[in-house]
Every structure is written in C-alpha cells, then in structure tokens.
Image 1 (cartoon, rainbow, N blue to C red):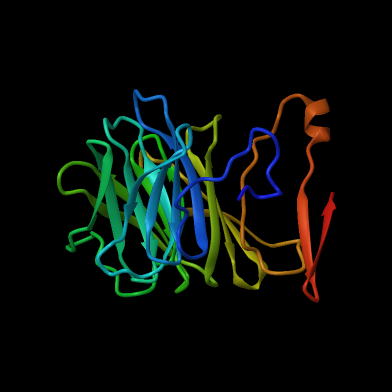
Image 2: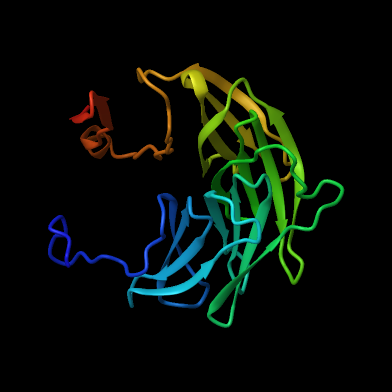
Amino acid sequence: MVSPLLNDGDFELICPPKDGISSLRFFKEPGCNPEYLLATSWDGSVQVHDTQLNKLVSRIVPENNRSILDACILTAGLDRPIIWTGGLSGSLYWCIHHSGRFGSKRCSPGSNQVDLLAAWLKFALCIYVVGFFVSGSWDSHLMLWESTCGPSSTAKLVSNVVLSDKVYAIDCQPVPSTGAYRIVVGMANRNIDVFEVDLNSPKLDCIQKRESSLKYQTRCVRICPIDPNSSRSRSYFSFRMLINRGASECGLH
C-alpha cells in the first residue's frame, strides 16, 4: 500500500529497520554511481540502501545487538568506504564494504584505541579530508579520533575534552579561510559550544560558549555556510517546531 503522504516521484524504501530510525546519511562509493542511504536504528542494526534501485544492500547487526544511535562514513582517499557506528553498547564499531556487502567488527582495544567503558552514544559527521571523525557522549565527553583503514581498522584518540553537559547533537564544517574545521556541539540545558580543529596539529580548542536562543532542548544542530550573495542570504529561513499538548505547531522565522 502506497503512503498517501508521498508525492509524484517519491517512493518508499523497502525493508526499513524494525524499530525507530536514529540517524540517516547519504553517501557514494568512490567510482560508483549509486547513491546509498545509511540508516541506523534502535533495533541494533545498520542498514545500507541503494536508493536508485530501491534495494537493501546490506543489514549489519554488531555482535552486542544494542541500539545504534548514529554513524559516520569515511570515503575520501579510500577505495572502499568505512562506516563508524556508536550506540548504547559503549563501543565503536567499524563496517567496511567488500564485494557488494558490508561486514562489521568491534575496533581492537588498546592504548589510545577504542575500548570504551562509558556510554559513547552520539556521533557527528565525519571530517572527511584525512580520516578524522568526532564523537560526543552522554557522559559529557567530546573526542576527536583518527581512523586508520585496512583489514584491522582502528581509531586512535587524538583529543578529548570534558564538556559541561550531555551531548545531544554535533555538526562540523571546514573553514575555507584557514583550512581548519569548526565543530558545533549541542548539549543538555540548552548549552552550545563551538570548537575549532587544525588537522595539522589535531586538538579540540573551544572558541565560543553560548546558550541556545531556543526555549527547549537542542536535539539537532547544522552549520550553514554564509552565502556571499546577500540577496540569497536574506531568502534563507530557519525552521522551528513547537510541541504543545500532543499537537505540533510549526513556524518559519
């Protein structure tokens, strides 16, 4: 049965996750045309969909079978994409594409590698250029990792910052003028921290602390580059949803 909410040209992906979807990421394999959709779920699975053929490419359930909250994809400079996942297990898992399928493995524990005893629960987008990624957690840590690829992928911890509150949302974007990366972290109690990272000397430096102007908890943050065309910039808008007594009220500002 086709959903009545679909418009012409829209379609519903087959074989969706069996529980709530916790994150979605689009990505492409190097040298391939299909656009893939990566979905993580509270059912403990990581699914990869071919959106052109509407086909489930792979469904991965890490050995702990705990809920997956987020994932990021490293593709730059690699012949096969590497997916890092994090969730309620307190561990990081990597998944690597091989012969049309994805397989998963827990990262080997060791000095400065991934052997996490606390609840590392929320991932950011990758810093794509040279294989770094950022993770945030409900125990108030922000961590910068360097990912290595190969038969035994590992993630080396290169910087760790203790924050004021639980991490609920992260985003990062390059700063064209400096070559560094800017990371925005949304936390409990409406706190927002802004960090900058120079990958030539990887370290998380906090450059700004602020309180969100929104009335309620921050659950998602996204960095939007400034458009040099002022007329286009004025046409942009922000979207806010207010939930009140079970009914939703949406406003554009």
